[in-house]
Structures are given as structure tokens and as C-alpha cells.
Image (cartoon, rainbow, N blue to C red):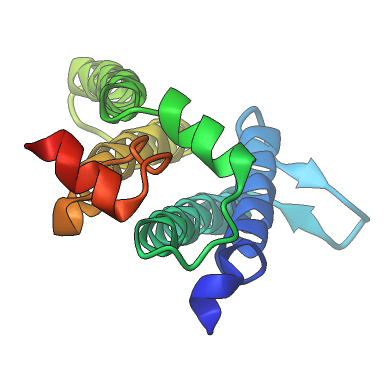
Length: 176
């Protein structure tokens, strides 16, 4: 039954959680934020922002897996918007986005490591930056491997993403 409502079960909560996490992480990147005389949001809250972002991305990926599976198994109601999205979002675009995010994260982490090494590996004062760049590195890896899995889901059972305009018997004739 849950395959009939992946938007409500995965996409909406995952998107909200990821948006909250990205907001917290980016908002706290420059410096701590004082909400009241007794409440200050600092690095510890930023850690939760990174966790929320990564958790939200994983839930969104699971929602994408559920949508593609329900599409391949014909559980959906022949949604035109999903067909358009699946024709535009390709395996290669997922690899490209994931690769760019991964490389940005690696470059940011390498720069911080270089600065830390130049200071003699003393106390690490760039914890905010480490959290920020590590988040992008991890998101890139998640997107890369999610793209692989989505691609595998799309070719399961002899069905291919984008070929759903054909009826099952027409697809068999097209394969010959």
C-alpha cells in the first residue's frame, strides 16, 4: 500500500528534513547564533543540521526508489509529470551532480587539512568548515550510488525508464 503514496511517506518528509538541515548548516556556518540571552545555537546544532540534511537526502532517495519501482510495476496512475522527470533526470546527470558535490567536498576538506597541517596539526579551529564540506562530500557519494541503484531499478524485469508508452506486447515486439 505504501507504494501508492511515496510522496507523502518519503518525498515530503525527506524534503522538509533536508531543507531544515541545509538551512541550519548554512545559517550556522559563519558564526554561532544567539536566539535569546540564554539560548545560543553553535557547532552542536550545526552537527544536527548536517545529520538532518543527510537523513533527508537518504529519505528522498528511498522515495525516488519507491516511485521508480511503482512506475516499473505499473502501480502508479500513469502520471505524466513522473514520465517527464524520468526522461530528464538521467543516470549521467545523477553521476555528474554527485561527482561535482563530491569533488567540492573533497576540495574543501583538503583545503582545511592543508591549513591544519600548515599550523602544525594543533587544535582544529575550523570545525564549522569541516562539517560543511564533509556534508557536501557525503551528499555527493549518496547521489552517485543512488543514481546507480535508480538505474538498476529502471532496467529490472526488462523494463526501461522512458519506455512506458509502449504496451507490454508492443515492448516484446520492439525487443525482437
